[in-house]
Length: 565
Image (cartoon, rainbow, N blue to C red):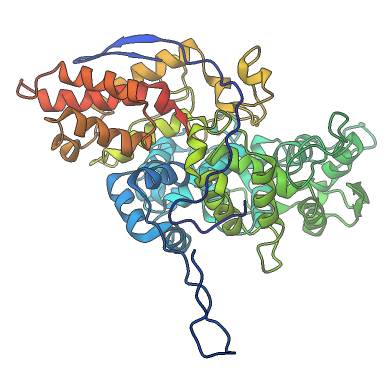
């Protein structure tokens, strides 16, 4: 099927049957007040004889259901809310996308850090404020499509604050995330420019101050960025067809060689910070500049192209060459689909999105708006039938579980401290924290498959399972239990609206199911949660609140919720 501007249901595709992976381990957690077990018709011609018949009437637009709207928002935002579901149903997907594309950022991470005093000299050697600004934007900013795409890009074009060899780390990392968010609706070629001249990326992948070859000592340019730019950010290891399948099938063709890496590394020499002033963080917001003394000006060859003279002109040639490579549309498109919709998109889905990347319909390559629209409106993303397809969907990544809850129940931080903090510990928190990837390979890799499982036996991948084990499952449930019950510091939920349904367990659980889980809870799961809710009297002291918390927590812990369809 083609991509569609979808405002209702489309014709279901045939279902595919491949075994699913193993269920999550079972754990038991006792909270302060609850215990849980988790794991068209045509025209008759009308006019005068011999005249041109009028065109057929357009088919009626079928409004989205609440469940369809919530499912879309689960892919396109950091989490659905009752108000955004209602707004999407009223506006339709096409109108909503247009609104989001036109919405400017309310504030950048950099400006928020400055406004909240983190540029004080006492913070020059700390990460203070970084986690707060990340959680705040993901949870409360209205430009939710930008936030979602920006975090998908951060999962692909990885920088982690812990790997920065800089002072003012929080500002350097904020400037990098701002690059991704500011350009999320722009052109992918511009993103390549901006990450290449960004201080955080240059520090993380060790090409800041990268020096040209020294014939006397035998020293060679650092190859880190040259390799990862091709392998992880743009091309991948093997040549791809437009639909993302391997050229050559079982005998794939390598995309590049070590000689390409060596040649490209010569281009990325001489990039340094714009100034030497370290008493403020300002230089980390400025693009890198060329230091001619350490920049390679001789010829460099890579990917059947060459450049000479060095400087920014050589970098432009290199990035233009990479951007024009036929692997870029399917490679980038598939990873964005994986982060936003499904771990195992069909070749047809990848091909349709890659075609939009290659040409937005007006001859423009790399138009992110066209790519995002193609991802979110494709029939494979929108068809109701995919909910029953065993190969479709993904494990909900841990950060999205937290932001989904926080958005659904209006978490705010009156003191503007957003003290949720670093959540990357798998034993006590989420096992993931945005902007804190331990390496350029992120918390999980797009091609990861759990070994010796039905998933791997079926030839499928499940990236998020790379950080899923008994320890992380227990850690997640304990952590989310604490959040649901007490929040984090002054960042607390507001359950006022959901409490209006607390007396009616069916209405309560159904509403939580729609908003948090897009209606994905099975009949058996719904029945179990209702029974747990009904075990607490609605007239007991704190009864309504405890009933609501039980419904929310058991939903967040259920395998039905953790598996996004």
